[in-house]
Length: 257
Ligand code: NAP
Image (cartoon, rainbow, N blue to C red; front, side, top):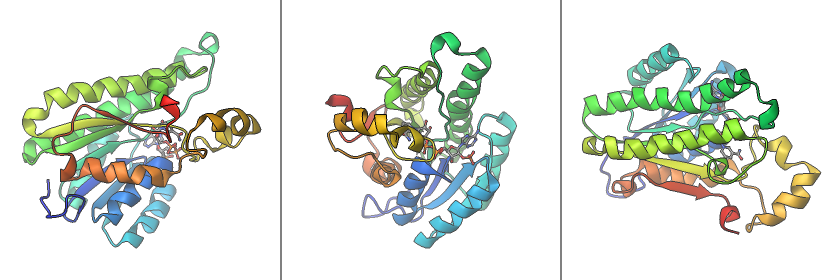
């Protein structure tokens, strides 16, 4: 990890954000780049990766777009190698790529359960395993962060597969916080609330959500990807050097209201 005099100064730091071409991942990548970090963004859509990388470069840092399906073991290995060739190291890893799911349990097929688990749970495992191996070999410590969800801790109807995948990554990071501490690698989870992104927009902009859900958010607005920038910088930076195994709820107060 870098040891700049200001704890939130990320110059010399390399961050990896999976799903960094859109929504929450893009908001975190923008925050990291604006704090001085070089950023690799992984996504399966090459055109979206390039477009997002061009926007992120406006912060003046190196940005490396990498095409990768995080549910594919070989693609994760190749993307890790490409990232290390391009940027030299990975100091923080935001395993954020994810997909939604919407089905009653009684209608849920095994194929749909596996589709969501493959990206959200297996993708996080494969990404963190590849990056942890690099961090251990390099010997400089690091920070692993998973994007979980309030769905992991609250009851959300029609989301059993999605919620289970997000609970899985929460359990994964708590294990890694213990297992990898001896390598000075910390692991934490972020639980976003209702954040307006391409994944969620149609749900949250419906009349029903505006009338019934929004009034239950104490901040009285939906979150936006930029609301995740600060926590990303904190977790990448040396300011969080002694903070591991935790969950950060970023939801405008929704969960406790
Ligand atoms: P989003 O805008 O749809 O972004 C999803 C990102 O994941 C995209 O960059 C997408 O890139 C990437 N992705 C999807 N499948 C992938 C795969 N197989 N391999 C690599 N990348 C993949 O949605 P978002 O709302 O920002 O979601 C980001 C994370 O936050 C997800 O894990 C989601 O579950 C979580 N979350 C969101 C909310 C919310 O309210 N929005 C709340 C709680 C948690 P490509 O399309 O290029 O693959």
